[in-house]
Image (cartoon, rainbow, N blue to C red):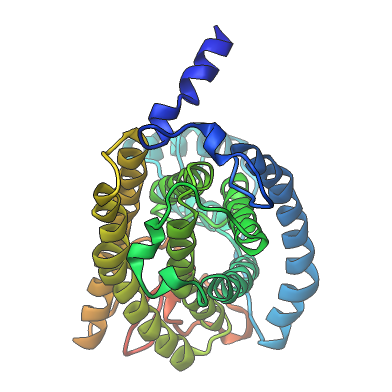
Length: 380
């Protein structure tokens, strides 16, 4: 039964054009071809990435945060209360009015005290500024190195300048070591992001992030074993071109460098729109949808790859919408907050909010996401 499923999954008609078999992609005459078995190494490499990230955040990002004077708010902790804690863990973090009244009778506290307890308890669970800075530092470092490495891999290739050459000789296209390692490292990194997503800073687009990571892993894996390697290297480098800008903006935001953060965000928004909404659909997707049909009839792998590309493009449109809306409000002088961010709740009306180093002023990103404003006020 398992062998039958295995054979069906690797049926050539699914993944390769007509009249071609996996035997055509076996190494010969010194020419090396992409193989599915190459991807096994990405799982241990993903674990290695998690180890490297731990030491990077401890010995590089943390001292850098101290150097940039990243300050943390002093959060007032919710006093121990078994009744409220049990409700918080089992029933919800934001009790309704009727539930507040019930908890008031059970705990002997007033409704105002219960609401205050839940505000403080929710704030305790929110990630610290240092955690967000270290996460942004790690991603910035990887994306920057990956973008530089990716450009080094593709800039001297003829298909970087002429998209039709992406399919020249397909799928009998051998690979070189730089392409192999570019693929393995990128795929390993996205595996590590998926493994750590439960412990990383959670945003309101958490589900979209999971979809993005899964779609990216599937796309990179498929494009490797189906030998879409030339197109794959172009797509990965295109994505890395804007990601490091966003992460650097987050870092400067947490350090309180408002003008620098705003300027980098503007550059990021421009690069994001150009690469994700112009180059990707009108050059890359055109290359993967139109040009292959000039060489062979459509097959399942062709539809599968372009369907996953469509999923990524929809996510890009969603994120571009948020970016453009924030940019519009910023230009018109309105206060802007990223709708994906999870704001820290304040109790300043009751005189209960304390901050370290007087850090009550705003920063242009909230919870690690783009936010721009003109009056620099913030509730994060």
